[in-house]
Each structure stands twice: as C-alpha cells, then as structure tokens.
Image (tube, rainbow, N blue to C red):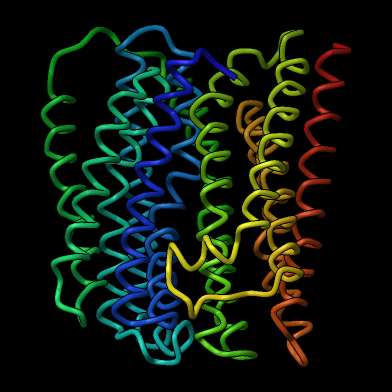
Length: 411
C-alpha cells in the first residue's frame, strides 16, 4: 500500500492521535469513572459533527484534487475554496448546535453536560476545520511529515490540558487546548496563503471540489448524530456506566480501526485517485482490500483474546465486558473496516451520491435498530445489531464500487 517510509509516517500520525485520545480517556477514567468517559465521548461527537460536515466531504475532495493537480497555483486555489466552503458549512452547523444547546443537553446527556459546554464544543469543532483542511492539503501534496508534526503538537497540548485541568473542568481544558492549537495553525496558514504564487486554474477544479459537499453533509451530520442517539439509547436502556464501558471497548478497538482508517486515508486514497479510470484500479483495490481485511482480522482477534487486560490497562478494573459480547462488537469493527476500503474507492471515483446513500446503512441504521429493539435491550444484543448494520454497509459499498469498476473496465 505504499513505500515503507510513507507507511511508517502514516502509522506515526495514527499513533499520535491514538495515544492522545487514550491519555485523555485514562485521566477521565481515573478521576471520574466510566460515566465521564461516555459523557466526554458525547462532547467529542459534537466536535466531530461540526468538523465532519467539512472533512468528510470537502476535506476528502481536497486531498483527491490536490493529488491530481500539478500546478501549485491550482492547489492553492483549491485550498482557498475548501476553506471558504468548509468554514461556512461548519459555522452554520456550530451555530445551530449552540442555539439548540439547551434541549441538546437534555437529549444527549439527560442534562448532565451543561448547555454552555455543548456550545463550547461546537465552537472548538469549527476552529478545528482549519488544521483539518491543512492536513487534507498536505496529504494531497504527500507531506505526511507535516501532518505528523501538527497532529503530535495538537494531541500533546490536549493531553497536557487534561492532566493539569481541575477535576471538574477537564473537558473545558481539553476543548480550549484544541481551539488554541487550531488558531495557531490558522495564523500560519493565513500567512502562507498571502504569499505570491503562480497562475491558478480555470475554476473547473473548484466546481469538482464543491460536489463533495453532499458527501460531507451526509457523513458529517448523520454519523455523529447517530452515534449520539446510539449512546443515549444504550444509556437509557442500560445505564451511563454500561454505555461508558461499551464506549471503552470502541476506544480500545480504535487501536485497530483508526490504524486501518489512517492507512486507507493517507496511503490508499491517493493511490485509488491516481489509478481510477485505468486498468490499475481493480488490482489496486483488490490488493488494498486483501491486506486491510487480513491484517485487521488478526489484530482484532488478538485484541479479543486480551480484551480484559487491554480495558484494565487503558481504563481500570471497573471496565469489563463478556467475551461473547466483545466478539460481536469486534466482528462489527472488522466489517466496518471492510466497508471503508470501498468507501475510499468511492471518494476516489467522486461518487458523492452513492456515498451519501450508503452512509444511511452505517451508524444511522445502527441507531434505528437500537431504538427499534430497545425493549429488553442488553449489551450483547447491541453488539449483534452493530454487526447487522455494518454487514449491510459493507455489502452496499462493495457492490457499488465493483459495479462501477466493471463498467469502467468495459468502456
């Protein structure tokens, strides 16, 4: 999936994020217990929603189109267009969440998280759009080293804020640290964009970039909102403690899923983009799929065998889950990784409509299933429904890509 140095840097970027999130979760678990882990995850979903409406669409498109452009003037033109579109969309999302923070507090946390903190999380997500798009631009330019430095600085700042913050203000400290690092990155980006550069493009590239807005609105809104609903449903049917334990298992499996997502985004997406429309695309897709599915299966199996020790290490002894239940959630994660292989192929193919439709079958369908089977809902049933959702998502993405790929090969 790439040359070893590129893979090494991509892995380092992923691990920087994982270590930072793990450090924050560990501090929360030791100071406040499982409930605080679940509530912090709810706040993170607010941040993810605001930044996701940009990064899941325009951000992916920026990477694809910058990788395909050769002139620096065109690349900068794309960056400016991405900033204008992304900040506008994310600002609207942040404003809507801030205005509705009162009802949202009751909905996502039964009033435990203050409305002001939800509004603060939305603002932090809006600020994070700039470094997010900068990362997408650098990926298109194959500057993974710069992505590593930015991600490491951000995570160190956030983890440090969590460590030094007062016990009842950890979330506020982490969100403030994220916003500050974003503002510093914004200042540097502003100075860079003011420098003179060569002639830009015809505007066709910007039009192609804006087509990704549909995918961003679909994934960026549906997934975080659906995850908020899923956690709230679990907490309502079980408890916030049990929802926190399920969240801890998801965080633990992120050591596999985030590595897979990072490698697909940083290594496979540029390769898919370069090979789409040629005879190299299908073999490249098959190679990526075989590596991603086989390696992730092995890593998830190792995690399942050692899940009790992993949860205790990352959190504490209160975080336990039955082996059978853990197996269901981890198998769902394997299906999730498989669906991502074909999702990134769809991004390279610029199939934003198919991406938007398919997104309904992932976390949104999981939230619907949890609500539908809420009576008598247990953690094991929640794991089974998780598998069902991602099996459908996997099948849809794979069928869409393979059908389009066969048509392209035949034309």
